[in-house]
Length: 281
Image 1 (tube, helix red, strand yellow):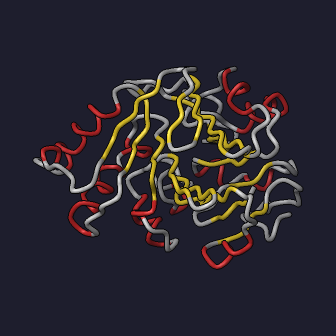
Image 2 (cartoon, one colour):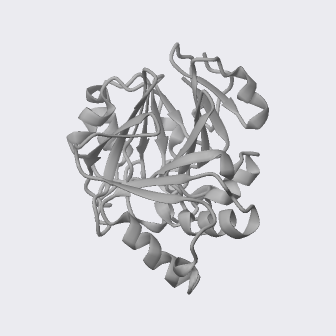
């Protein structure tokens, strides 16, 4: 059941997802629900004043992130969520608006809150090397600082399932140049499936990633700017969406063209991500 609408197109009733807004609405979560909070739903450029990509998931007290854009800590604080409670961060690809927040995450954890609990960061092959290089660019010398908490990196390859902290992850190759694998992720946990396209233009592997998911989050960068490469637009998604066979589809990573045309998307099984939105499924 949907509690309220969001954006010009609103949201519509569904038996599969309970959608609400901000921290005060998190009490509607049922014991067997997986709860997703949209930390950032924007593109790399903050279109519409939105934060960069990040999703916080709470499953029976186990908390993890999917992507960690540079503004993620801002969003976490805004939503009243504790960064130290996050056990795992899953990264789709190595562009700054999806993974650069890890740099501030480490520094904040080490110097500000003096985190003690372990953190596992999961991403494509090359993640750890790129992370340390990014640390050095943004905060010279920081990559040499040994954090006071255990920070472990786990790297995945295409279509080789791994299990991390009770979550089974399968990565599917997208088409989005990032110097490493740009992946769509399928996360399976406790009988629930959360899938996410990451950044990509249309590839048929999205069907395998999304099939049967309780919630499939997909980038929808533009509405009708079909010449933009390596990103999805609504014209393509509208044609392909039934093949995904997901229970519910959430559009995110929208530019100004897409944000201005949300009212044109009228499918009842499609909702729009907004910073602070809470989805129980």
